Amino acid sequence: MKTRPRFPSGPLGGGAAAPSVLIADPDVATRSVLRIVLERTGYRTRAAVTAAEALALLNDRPDALVTELVFPDRRGLELVQAARQADPATIVIVLSEISNDLAVIEALRAGAHDYVRKPFSPDELVARLERHGSRD
Amino acid sequence: MARGTDWIFGGTVLASVALESYALAALVASSFAPMRALVHGSPVAAAVVRGLNLTALNAVAVTLIILLLHVVTAAGRERDGADTGYWLEHLAEGLVGDPQAARPRPTRAALEAMLQLQDTLSGDAGERATELLRRSGLVRAGALSARFRTRFSRLEAFEILARARLPETLPVIHPFLADRDDMLRFAAARAAARVADAATAPDLAQRLAGTTFGSRAWLEILLIARAPLPLVRTLLASRDPAARWAAVEAVGRRYLLTFAGDVAGLLSEDDAELLAAALRALARLRYPPVGREALVLAAARSEPDFVRLQAVRVLALLGGEEVAAVLWDRLADPSFYVRQAAARALETTDATLLLRASQSHPDRYGRAMARQALPVAHAA
Image 1 (cartoon, rainbow over the protein chains, first blue to last red):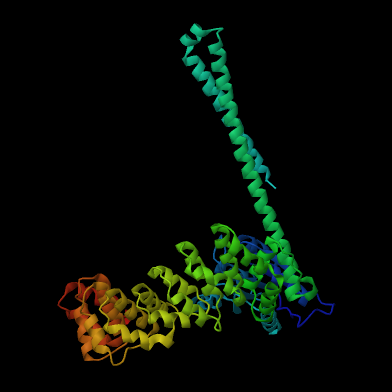
Image 2: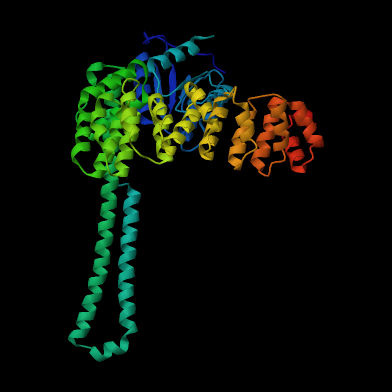
């Protein structure tokens, strides 16, 4: 099991390899925004449109997963659980259009570190990612 | 672009149709062999053969046209998606990265991308997305199409205006709130409800006060309204039963606690639908109608059963001996749903009585329902 990565607070200054974030979301606008804002902050990103695609990309052991709960092929909760089982050090943030309390509770119980509702502020999401990533 | 599999599919369909056409022609020709012998070498035979050939060619041509349309439509859809994707990347770069990058062109794809980004972003980036939409002039173009074009393009324009949520576009929608075309009027009201913010919603409520819709249409408008309070207030005071019912229902569904007192004031209504909606709203808000307990108790014994059901749910918010007695009675209600609600209400108001009901209620269905509602520990 690898150690939890140190996430950048602001653009990376070089040296250490940039932490990788897997973006799993069927919505193209969300994927575009996340990719741009995360890469500008210093992360490497990969994107998946379906849950099955995301599950396959989890084999690359990303440092963090930002995922929707609603996918056309299966439930996003399965992805949350799979990511945590594959590597407990992976930071999992759910970014979802579902806003009810039950979904939040289920996601946190499944192992998500945080839950952000859509529409979302990209700066806030990056700050949350950094906060969870910088914890030992 | 069409995929390789599309061409294979198209080719297979084409070949099948051509073969079927000629097989049919051969079948017709062989079936009329005696006739063919009679007319052999005559102009009639030649005409029949030409007719068969023409029919087969027509079938092939029609199939070709359908396949071409399919390919063109698919390619158009793919091109639109690619254009929107390009603009999404370009505009997102401007909104969360380099502000100079966000310069949309007045195209359909750019508008779609802006609307998607506005739906996606909140906070500072969300405000920048709204500002971008405002400055683009694209919404103004959509507004113009609402004024001058066909019914379809007007409906489409309302949808765009609703998604853009720019209050300054409301004057474009206002004239259609009194349109004679029911569909246009409803689409305009839906769009206006989504666009009107806290500042413009009171004016919209006044404009809609004189409009007539069915109860479900009103409810939909209220459920999607961005700032629903003024419209709910107006409709609660309306004389139109459909509008009042929708307003009461919306109070419960949108958890508008501000109007709980107004809804409780409707418990003396004679209209069963309205009374049930008021009781349902109070139960959803978990608002005990203090001072009106007698009305709820009366409703719990009244007809029809859907009123009793909602009344029993409100009784769960109250307490006391009289409530317990009515809930005991309702365990023997002819309606399964009322019995179920009564058992659940007893579970929260008087668990001891529920336990007793599970053992000694005179009605066997009441006893069974009470047993089902018992907490696990008691049931064991």
